[in-house]
Amino acid sequence: MRLRRNSDIELGERALPDLLTGVLEQLEGASMILAPGDIPIYQSAAIDELGILKENRIESQELLALVRVVRRTSTKQQGSIEIARGPIGEGKHELTVNVIPLADENLVLVLMSDESEAQRVHEVRRDFVANISHELKTPIGALSLLSEAVLGAKDDPEAVKKFATRMQSEAKRLTDLVQEIIQLSRVQDSDPLKVAQEFGVNDLIKEAIDQCKTTADARHIWVNFTETQDFTVKGDREQLIMAIHNLIENAINYSPEGTNVSITSKLQDSIVDIAVTDQGIGIPETEIERIFERFYRVDPARSRQTGGTGLGLSIVKHIVTKHGGEIKVWSSENVGSTFSVRLPIVTNEVESA
Image (cartoon, rainbow, N blue to C red):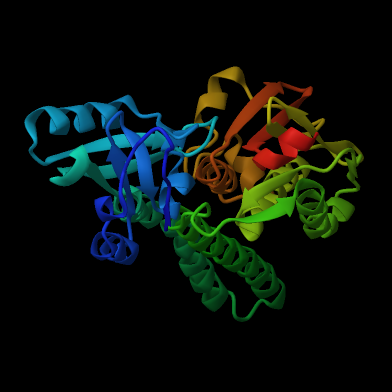
């Protein structure tokens, strides 16, 4: 928490008594006190994290409208507003706002709590139940049938070996599916910007490439990353690596053997663009809108062959959106695809670039 004073506003120490600031410091949500002219003279650290202010002025017209009603009526107002998580992308903070008039100096107290987390948990639980019951039926049903086949072929060693191999394949598929469901659940249930740290983009890309090395070598695919200027982003390191890893592995799995997968990064208007390009089968134009849906597969047969669960791209989109970014796709059938993760970089880096 910190106190901000504006030289154009004459406020004595008694305008913000220790008791008031002490109470505000104990609150979990975001808070600020506005002087006449709606200039903040006190704000919590969460205000900066949410991006409520720009050049010490309130950005949200919805919030300003609530404040003006309070000043006009001298009565408490409550409402809900949405704040973008970053300068690009679809991510939003859903905030419950209480605006309260203070008796002294025509001050207004603003209290905000982020309801995005509760809403997210509700949606995760609802979607989880709807999707998981269907997706688990296939490998579990296959294992059940194969176990019956093994029992029926107990006197035929070759048949037992064949069925056992298929059982191993289905068991691996089930394990991969459960693992990615857990990953998706964790991503959906977290807010990486609340505990954000800063990381260099080049290191994130190199770590993701290293994790895909075994898969790439097995398919004789060359993964190429030409390092350029490094850029710094903030968020959850493991999640960002996971997003890039999923895109690279997806490119490998849907590319012919002996082809190239290339990764580039470039800066445009304070946004770093991390692009993963393959020479694969491409995506039909009619399918592009659906590829980020949970469990959606463009080519179910190929997904089964490569062990795809249909969750990889959904995980990527959730991670990128949670980091205040966006993901773009270009694809042409039998030519290849490019997936671009676009993230805001650390502000002070733009100023020094």
